[in-house]
Length: 261
Image (cartoon, rainbow, N blue to C red; front, side, top):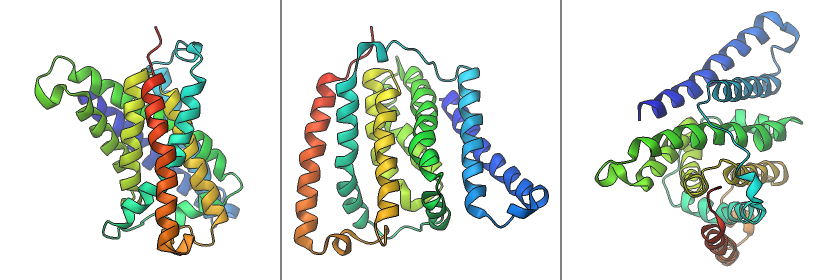
């Protein structure tokens, strides 16, 4: 448990410190770029992710091995992507039933999404970095800590949910937390079953890539489903189609996911 908290602190501290330092550098050193908030956000995200990945690999907080990829788990990757597609509508509909939550980083997130370099950060770098930390380090340490303990502390689902909660909190944005909690639980289950971050990276990549595309295609990405789809009937049909993708994908993941020998 202590290790998981330390890893979470390291991750959060790197984000805050790098963001602050980049802000100072842009303001006082690179004066011509002091007003380019979009570039500042991109640079901060890239630098903080690079430092995080380097630290967690160098200190071996996350153990990386080629064993899992050698099992040729391509069918798992395919259904991980499909599961991600299937979560979008149900998650959004669930969130719309909740009280409206403040979207405190809406402008900053939109700037990253609209940037030419946004996909590199959101679709490629973030999935690997966050899976490395939250599943490969935090959840791994929580599962190790829970071994041999009695009751709910010894239940792997407790540790999966705890890691998902930390993952949701890490977004520092209440509006993103419900979806992050749901997806984080799915990602945690996948890591528990495989012992590898790779299936989670595939799902996380698909999730973030869809968000990136929708942000750049939809006239108002924050609009409610009924506004985007035109009617309540269309929302219900979209929900049904999504479940017809999500539920079979989870079934197939449950069937094919296994640990490397």
